[in-house]
Image 1 (tube, helix red, strand yellow):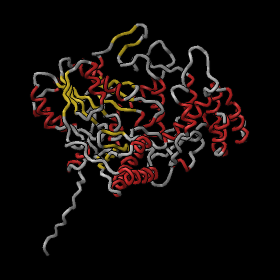
Image 2 (tube, helix red, strand yellow; image 1 turned 120 degrees about the vertical axis):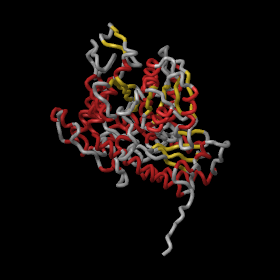
Image 3 (cartoon, one colour; image 1 turned 60 degrees about the vertical axis):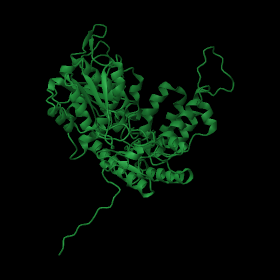
Image 4 (cartoon, rainbow, N blue to C red; image 1 turned 90 degrees about the vertical axis):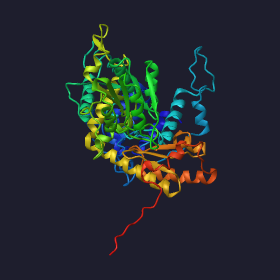
Length: 528
């Protein structure tokens, strides 16, 4: 069946309530794919409106259908897609791709010929894209192991994909290139500056391609401020931190961690004390990659104070890829902000907020950016970022997400994730699976399943003998129930993993430092 017919069939079942909102989207699709123009005419007819009667301001008038909300268990923001559902956001789990469709996505099938000769049995572009759409639909519906929020609605921005929006150069120094989104980028930077309690006169930032770029930028500034410094970071830090050390040829210390994933503060103090003759660059994890552990910034600052290391001799970068976007919205959470002596922070935009392309935000103190700033006449701007050409779409999408969600909406999503993560931990414990959940975290760490097919189906991230699920706004209790059901069946068939070595990640799950130890609480009663 052709892509046009499949698209028409998929849309027609919901047509009466959604058609008006779909028209604008379809106009954009028609511009790129004239063959789909019949879809727009079909929608117009079924909706009972003429194309010209639908004004651009009406794009979001149609409310999201209730079934996108999954069920009453989900307290976060429902998937608001009015026409094309964000497949990972609904409660439905879609069937895997058929072998026939898989064959259309092999390396050979998607090969781009150089000599213009195409075999008769080579699938067409339409067939390939149809199969690819089904693959993404299926894989997104069972996405559990990586921190990406698949529940978002950006259809109002589809028209802007026609433009080559490039924010080349510094966000605050316009270049001669006029097709940019700097005003939106600056608005995003202002939001995060306020969120992290920064002095607007003292702050600088930009929209990055991802959290890794934010880390590379933060560590670069640190090295430029302290060329002879040593970088200290926990061994459970994101790999991009030590990648930065390699790129910039920095001396680095990988500090062991406590069982729940926080940096070992005593060992950090010991290593700092050994090297008091050199400045210190410290990476503070606001949520580690595997266990979701949050390093205690205040305790690290006390370590520096105890060693009498003056402010001008240390530099603190905070890797807050996921949890820095959550902690400001959690009541009584530790304060990570520029009110304290930190120097930079990196946050991912596509994780908690949700975005169709990877993106992020890097923030730093304005005094540090002067260390790398260079005037580029070709741009009529200054070079202050890692990348030269920068995706202006990302800034637009982040701005739109922040405006549409608002602080109240983000907080609701955060609370949903925290509550649902606890539900997952309880359900796993109920079937005898060893698992743990850090405070302030939505990352549930569990014993690694032995069945590799199960791991790949649910896209679990694994490290030695443990795996984890990162609960995001698109993960619902009904999906968790299905996940736990299939895991129980997998364990019954394949058994359970044993610790791979002494001190392995699995053995650390039983350490009482996680809290919620596997012990009964004694009741003490006073004598009457």
